[in-house]
Length: 343
Image (cartoon, rainbow, N blue to C red; front, top):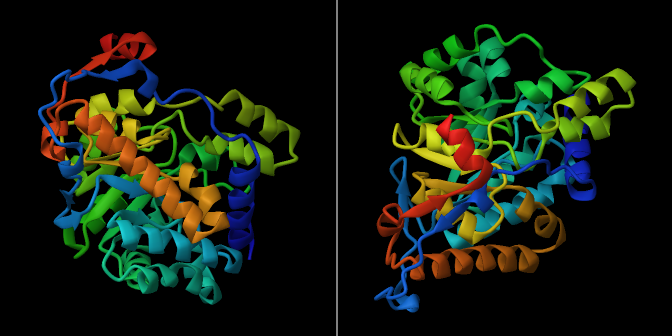
């Protein structure tokens, strides 16, 4: 089961190796301080809505894992924290389970552990093109999903020894499924960002939301460099380590055109606050949750609690009593991010 084994490789590498490359741009964003916030910190409300779902906070547990028996416990813990904190959650690519039913349980556990959470299924654009609506329906049914994420990972595919190098027909496949599919379709990048031009294509295809997956967090080129012993592929991967659109730049290009999840280098609750102030519906995190998810429920709860408290304090200090207020908070943008936005 090559696909299943690869999922375990990815999990191990993300936990043990340095796979974060570049900057997402959040250090270039400063929220304008409200010296007179006129709020009670204890009364700050984090609740928000996304694609018709009510969430207790604008924090999304981004796609991480599944597809190997050893990942089942991790997904159980992630689902439990999503349920306890009322967060949205995505699973990793379900290709392995669609090819090998014996690993379905590694994904199916998330709905068992999170009966009320907003859960997102996950299928690659290439798999959607090649297998069509049948695989999409099976992916959604597998976890009782509230939305289907179609992931775009062509940087990773180009570096990966087993990668799919033919991207033709993927946009048409996305448009076809968006037309009739009963579940909202989110199109997500996986570390190289979404440009305004690509966003325009995706909205035109009928996407319900876009997950930016910007550069500056986990680099899947770096992950694949760690996996391969092929010298040519390692050299190619090294050259593309910092390829892509930083998350903040991608957000600035796409914000205001439809529902957006900002993922890629989101590392603190302050980053989530900045993302919302810049126009994101949700801020998504993967790597910060991965190591605690490998440890215990207590470690994972502590991580989620810390992020949400950071978000709450950032809201307090901008005078934002609720997420709608935070979305109107003013920001300063400096440095390389500002330079890129002015080009």
